[in-house]
Length: 193
Image 1 (tube, one colour):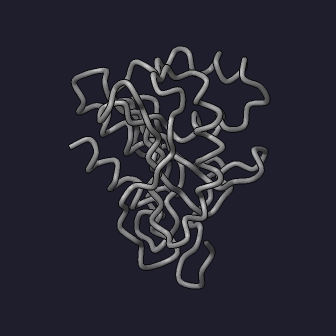
Image 2 (image 1 turned 30 degrees about the vertical axis):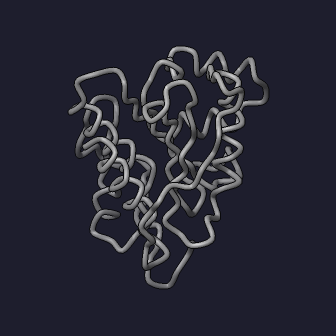
């Protein structure tokens, strides 16, 4: 959501690496973003998720970097989705945290203007997993995109009731047009706590 008070800050062409954690690298322009007010990019979210993952001591909770859910939602057929998702063992996890981004064009890196969080929740009722969507903007503009990702993943999940529901999670509302990435990271932290 573009606004006069926030912008997509920085450039990343040929910039030096300033920080890395696991397989995620932050560059100088990412640090400028953190000084804000700016939209949080996928590298910052991936870095934070890698940080949260490092503190986990079991395989029940999986935090995926932003490119994996985006890839899964843009693959052309169920066989391709299954091939990418199989090593993730989604059905065996209690919780899987997936980013949702409204970038309509997979050929545009760092496109889109809104982040939300889709949680595959098998913890509350293991026989009937569900997707819980957290959107910090009123009107839930990313719901159709989250529903598309859930639809792509449903065939990979075992469910005694026959369907894996998609519900809206209770989510705090952001008060500006650019903090959606911060809300995604805060919600993920609360879930991991």
